[in-house]
Amino acid sequence: MTHVFHGHCPVCDTDTSFASPDDWYRDHLNCQTCGSIPRERAFAWALERFCPDWRGKTIHESSPAERLVSTRLRDGCADYIGTQYFPDLKPGEMRNGFRSENLEAMSFGDASIDLHVHLDVLEHVNHPDRCFADMERTLRPGGMMIFTTPIYEQKVETERRGFYDDDHKINFILEPEYHGNPIDETGAPVTFHYGHNISDMILMWTRNCGVLCIAPNDATMGIVGKFREVFVVTKHA
Image 1 (cartoon, rainbow, N blue to C red):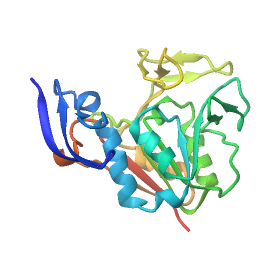
Image 2: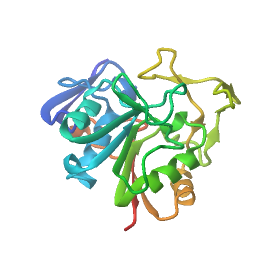
Image 3: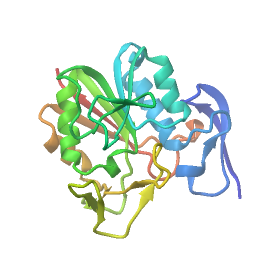
């Protein structure tokens, strides 16, 4: 059964409809104009809501995909930096138009970035505490991290599912799970299932930040279904 909603897409900024062939809206409820999915629309809505002047900022996007939500950032912001993690490159080196950066230990200078953004990246990192500490380090006062990552409604505590060893080999603790990877067709191993304690963990991992976790639920924007949370973490001035 096809599910259809009508409204306005925050990604392509058009009046359109959203359709899914089944009730797994997370991956299947596409904008009929731009093809975006709910978490991308939740991110785009939060970006405009909490950082409407993003076009004039220095933006770092980790692991962008060839989808409109990322190309809109790249094309709309003159000071946009797109990065991928290439283990065989040194931080700051370039490949295929992307700067090589490990979100856990970036080569950006202190207080050099206004906005760190990423969509469904943090469930694939080895040390999320280091990611947040380094994002905070590199943010200017008043800067933000705006991102999505799956939050499992049945989990109170965050669960580690795998880890990378010193040779960058994945070791699974629980059943292996992979998600799509824009630079590797074999996929990205899932290292964490985040639970409801994620906001508290972010506060522990940062020294001077505030955390908002928002789960917009609005069919007129095509933001419905599971895993629609978007986070806005602000570094206090």
